[in-house]
Length: 635
Image 1 (tube, rainbow, N blue to C red):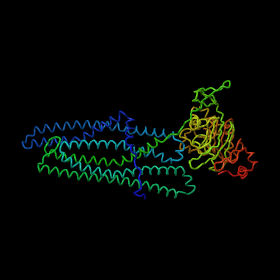
Image 2 (image 1 turned 180 degrees about the horizontal axis):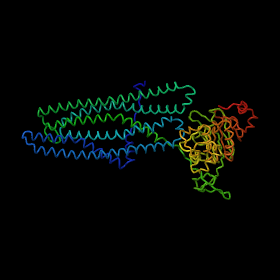
Image 3 (image 1 turned 90 degrees about the horizontal axis):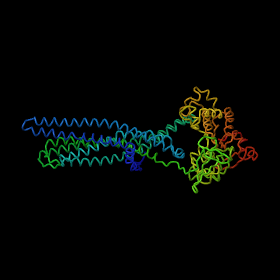
Image 4 (image 1 turned 90 degrees about the vertical axis):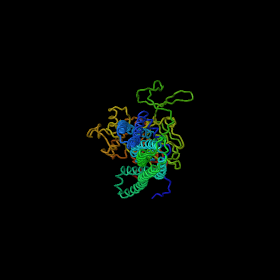
């Protein structure tokens, strides 16, 4: 159990102000209109005591004489005016409820868009180091707590605050002595709210964090359900979940314990305050003490009775504030997490060399708008303002590259390699040797710690990341298919590709045959990451996607790892056609798939220990020879 002395997280200062500023930024006209309607409603709800005083005063004036005609006119006129105010209040209430719905849902929509846009610009490292379920919690739980706060708590707090100020102003107008009694009660209420509500706020922040971790764990176990079952780890998963769930329970219990006791405490203080006002008011009436008021009225029944009604209304609105503290604190905790995601530093891109369509005439490369099948690097030179074009050939050099995912732990050590245009370079080695890391550096998913990587003679740090990645086709070990048709998923490699281009790419990759056997062929709808397809079929679609991109450089990271031997033979022919004339980097555990590579790099603990063709490495009888003649796959 967490110690009560442990420092609890607090909501950052400025979160409320930033949220209000954001709301006004989204709805600069509609929000002020809504606030005006809410203020009018609050003021009208505070006015019945004034009309009650007038009615009782009219009755007092005519009590002795017994003539009720003048009192009747006063009472009827008062009721009519009050009725008009209530009708206007009804109209303003209808308006603000309608506009509040627009503002609330519109704000949630705009914030979700902001979060998603911000997330798209984050570096890959963010997704590698943060639980996906916790990230999803920003879009679900945090957004929902914000919805409740904006649609319910903020309007109620505004109404209560305006009502309290208006009612207390009327109290001072009627009787300063009784208003001072109420002020003493307010001091006690504020003290209790600060002590109890402050504890609730800290625990609600912890609750939101614990909820994100729980959802992250659930998402992880759902994705790995087959692994859990095949290793019979159900009981261990349940035990781990119970620990996370128990922590969420404890944080929620503490937060709601504080929040739930605040309301009854304030209600009872309000009841005591009502009795105190009644006693003091009765004493003033009996003693005939002079009244101190802004109105100049003497102490009478027409003052004390409305004052008691206002005291009840005053205490009730203070209690309403306490009831909203739960939702407000949860909403602010969720808002803080939303802003944290929006404020994350985007991926840094200092590149200025871009990729353009080009054509070559008389040895001169020029830029063009139409797709020619030839690409070039557009290199602006800041020194003299000139622009040069370099043909994209796929010449890649890594020179003494060091890298570590953690600054204190180096993964790659002095890696040097040369990939000439059209060469097929293969990486082999045990899991964790650094094969995939090299391809991550080529894509600039991560930046190197030391050394240089040059692409067609250009330092890749000078190339815009989007253009760099557009020049690299990649097939990953983990296939990701999106909700859409088979055709849509293939076209994801190049959005302007025609249906004919997509079909040609599928034929090249060897996927056309199985696609035509699907119920709707290329129009079949895929959902849940292509769950209706086999792993091998999904891999073939990923290869087709890379084929339609028609990139000069290809990276195949275990591209055939999920394909059976028979299918692999079919795919290999397509892959050979796909790789023809391109620079290709291949990562494979099956050594049979890399035999025909021009260069094979053997990695061990982040270092290249052997390099050469298949025949050369076999002749050297080193590590590769041991692996190949041992007839086992690297795992």
